[in-house]
Image (cartoon, rainbow, N blue to C red; front, side):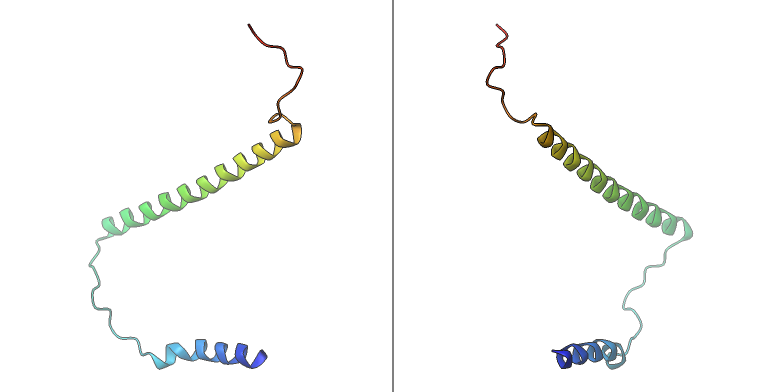
Length: 82
């Protein structure tokens, strides 16, 4: 097991040396304004992703809290509103 792990590590470390890096086939010439817009879009994207994760965590905590309180269960002696 250790032999396979060490062989995989050596292969991963040696792979960049075996594949020489050449010049990129296409590099877009971005002006400083375009670069600013690109970074702004990336920042807004990641803020949105983090916001969605926070909202999901809050909703899961709320659902767990209502289950602990027993709100999701129907009461047998509840009065009818007629």
